[in-house]
Amino acid sequence: MKYAVEARRVDANGSLALAHGAEVVLGTDMVGRKDAMNPVELLLSALAACMIKGVERVTPTLKFQFDTVQVKLEADRQDAPPKLVAIRYEIMVGTTESDTRLDLLLRNILKYGTISNTLAGAVPMTGTIRRA
Image (cartoon, helix red, strand yellow):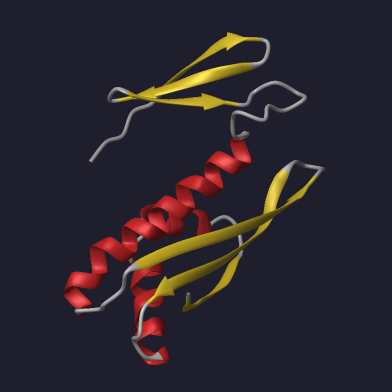
C-alpha cells in the first residue's frame, strides 16, 4: 500500500497538507499557531490515530468489549541535533475486561501499528494501558 500527501506554504504563518480531499492546517512558522499543530504534534497525532485504529482493528478478533478509547502522548526533544529522544503514551479504555485482557490488547495495538512500529524503531517508546 502506498500513501501520498501534498503540502504547500500558504503564507508566512502556515501551510496546508492535502490527502484524498482532506485538509490539515500546519503550524510551520517559527512562532507557532494556536489554530494549527506543529510537526511534532502532528507526529504524535499520527501515533494516537494509529493506536486508536489498532483498537478498532484487533478488538473484533480478540472479542474485546469496550466503549471508549483515549490516548495521551508526550515527547521529549533534544536541541542538538534536534530530534525526539523519548515518547510516552497512556491509553485509557472504557471497558470491564480484566487486566490480562488489557495487556493483550496493548500487545496487539503495538504489534500491528504501522506508525507505532516505525517510531519504536527510532525513538524509545514507553507507556501504559488502563481502564478509563
